[in-house]
Image (cartoon, rainbow, N blue to C red; front, side, top):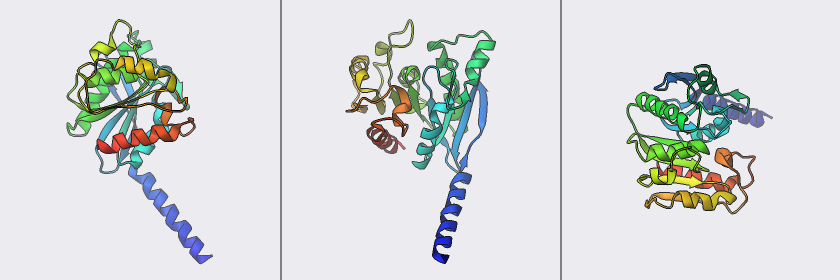
Length: 244
C-alpha cells in the first residue's frame, strides 16, 4: 500500500508540474484592416513560440486543442488563432469572424490572409524575431503555402488538405517558388488534387504524406478520433522534430 501511495503521489506531482509548464492565455492583436484577431497560447515555460496553427473553414482556434498539446509534448510553444472566415468547433466560437462581420470587413478565404500575416508578425515579435513554422488546415493550408512562398519569417510549413479554394487566385502558380521544408497531406480521395496543386513546385524538402486509409479533410487527420490517425501523426511528428 505504501509503495502504491508513493507511486500515485509521484505521478500526480508530475502531472501538476506538466500543467504548470504550459502557459495558456487568450490574446488579441489587429490585422491591417483593423479586424481584431483572437488567439490561444499553448506556451511551454522557457520556450519561445515558433508554431502558428490556423483552422479550416467553418471552424475556430478550437480545432487545435488536442494538437497543440501534442506539439507541446514535442517541445514546441504554439499559438492557435481564429481567422475571419470560420464559426466554431469544440465549444470555442470564432471571435475574429464575429469582429470582422461587425465591422463589415472581407470575410472570405483570401481575406483571411491578413489575419494569418498579423499572427505571424505577432508571434515573430514575441519570440525575438525567430522564423516560425506555419500550420494550415483546408483553406488556411492554401494560405499557409502561399505565405510560406513569400515570407522570410517562415522556416517551415505544414498544410493539411490544401486546394484551389481562394477565389480569383491560382494557388498552383502562387506557390511554385516554395523553397523551404514543407509537409503536405490530405484525405486519400484528395491525393490527386493535391498532387496537381503541387505540380509546379520543385522542392526536394517537400514531403507529401499519402494515407493508405480513407483519412479525413484538414488537420483533423491528427485527431486521435480519426481513422488512420497514427500514420498521419507519425509523419507529421517526424517533420516537426526534423525542423525544431
